[in-house]
Length: 251
Ligand SMILES: [Zn+2]
Ligand SMILES: [Zn+2]
Image (cartoon, rainbow, N blue to C red):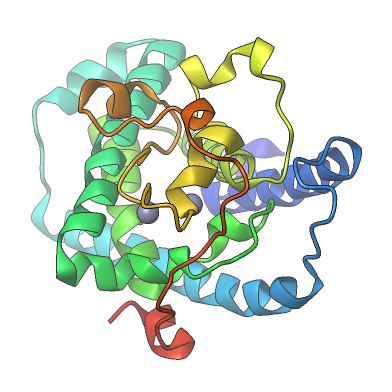
């Protein structure tokens, strides 16, 4: 049965299943017990369609472009010989590295910031907040994910679905209103809510902690801020809110 699924179907299954899991986890172990998501949830559902549109157009452009020029980096035949675990780990790490720099670029380049600022307009962080991205942001982010996984590492449909599904889990997790005990030391390796939330704060730490899945890039390239060393009662969002509809396009 799995062979008949498209990678988008597998990704959607991951999204539905893990969204439900995170809703439950936030009820059991909330970081902020008084969080009210009713008002923002309606808006985030609208935003989700901008994301789906951006991702799908991006994937379509990449597949048309690729099939028309027949790129071959030489590396493709080699990576196809590796075991799934080796290919998966290296591809995931490489794609996360590219996304770290893309995200960092979005904060430093005014043109790219226009594509990303919409993600920072949210003033409430919970499991669904990571999907608040502009059309252009979704369009740009899909490039490294598809190019690395599909074209450089020759992922099968199932492998690509699992890889994108893992990305969905990382997104849900890093934005969630979930209290993770510090003693677990997850943030040494992974982007946790405590690690990512300061990136959405109005404390002046928005140019810190750019990582998507792994925290190593921020530590290596000097953009790490220790969540334990900043105040925890910060406000989320942008001091000057842009026009929501325009920033949703990312143009
Ligand atoms: Zn950002
Ligand atoms: Zn975020």
